[in-house]
Image (tube, rainbow, N blue to C red; front, side):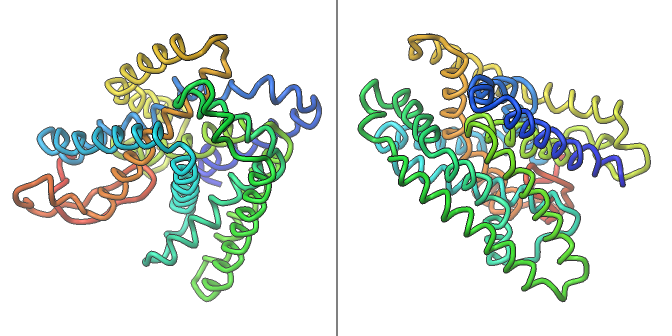
Length: 360
């Protein structure tokens, strides 16, 4: 087993399983009391920084002139999403759930040993297979608690009475969770059957099944705010650190012997977090102001839910940024493409293409 496999698969799964065991041992009250902790940790370590590193990734791959134009578009998308969330929170939350399934699922798939086959149908299958049950299991098992989180989130963006008017009924939440879980299992089985003749790919689907089984165990055992927060922190965002280090601190992610030792990993992690600071500081400031003005109790739970609002607003821009870099659809940023170059990595997907984004 490689150091990378240990650090980015075995250890995260061990953390999730340990948390699930603790939730079963100490009961529902314990995980509900601890629900805010993963989200608060994620504000400083790994979680929020993995998205806030987008500016550094763009600067290193594209240079400053293109980055300025790219982040003007990035900010414009955030503004549109924020406005839509205030005016139409219910459809926006449905959209965010669907986007999260896509984002989590593809990140999981690209983080496995073999590449996802080319074609949108394979990408969709991989995303649903690995992302649908991550949300589906907590929704199906904890519908009342999930509905309460949604109600609180909507109140923060829509006023004190908006949550009770727009919140999803627990029965709807449970049914949605059951459908998502069934869709994820069906997609994973379909992927395994459809790729059975591809060398090594059936084993890849088996590996994904083990991952999702252990992630689902946490979703069954623990409060949904806690389980999804810990998944986001210890699985999704943590595993995204490796491709980020490939851009920001290449020796920390290079496949050579010793590259994944603890000291190198720590240096790479530190480099990513330092690179994320220009976007982290204004985000922390906005969160602090929002928490002070909107939360009557100034509780850790309210701060955790406000951080969810931040993710709702920034994830569409983050995902669009990743997809643009991956596909090379950045023609609007350059008057003409300079000579081609091969790009190593970007968050969520391994990028290898030719085009104008080449300054590493």
